Image 1 (tube, rainbow, N blue to C red):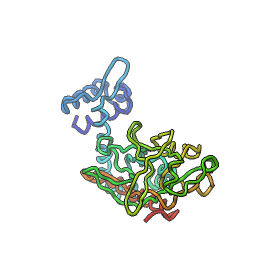
Image 2 (cartoon, one colour):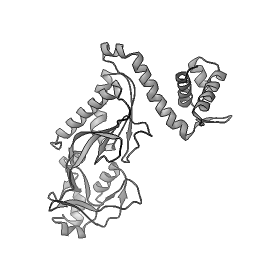
Image 3 (spheres, rainbow, N blue to C red):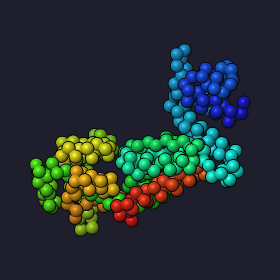
Image 4 (cartoon, helix red, strand yellow):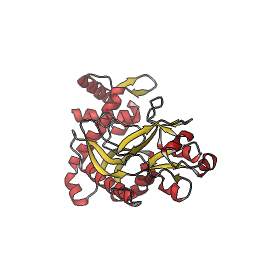
Length: 306
């Protein structure tokens, strides 16, 4: 077997977590599958799988290699069908994306059927998380990121700017009143947000005389994802500072109210981020163009994109 064949065999074992099932699906003897994986491990110099009499488990190195294998095998499949793709415009293969829960729910997932109807052989993996994923190590083709991109080796394709809003619930206003100035914040509570629980929270962020500042505020609750952040505000637990586009429906419905409109956090850039060290395949490039269009339309619907 060639190195590519070994990758294919290993990927099938990794997907099924069974040498027997992998052998059956590939039409090979179990001994050939086991030997192929062993040769691959010897060639790479790492253990890819933990084997026991009862189960097969990927090692950490095995998981990382499996993610790269899927990309490489999809690219090879695309190469073999590139001339068919030119005539049919059909895309095939896996795309792995990451974005916030709000962007996934409000913008991307509602439009995804259109993309899959045009390219039914695409396989889209969407990670919805507020943490900053490692694009290369975790095998992401593209991520939607709010905020500045500072990591070396990454390319950011701008989408627009997210206008920020300070929000409270009507229930909160009934109990604590409405803050009208920065001085009023001493009498109010903030729902704290941090990507990593236990990390230092920044406080109430705003721009004053052209300078970005953070005002320390009291608050009984800290969350680490966007859905919980909104839910805490709806439960009247304090003020939140969020991109307007993510809460515009709640504001229109009267479930949230904007306050301190003259003291908002600076606009947050929204970008598509990808690793430049890898040549973009046709499917990744097409999906990124589609995603860019979806996000621009999402921002433009409420006039928050710039």
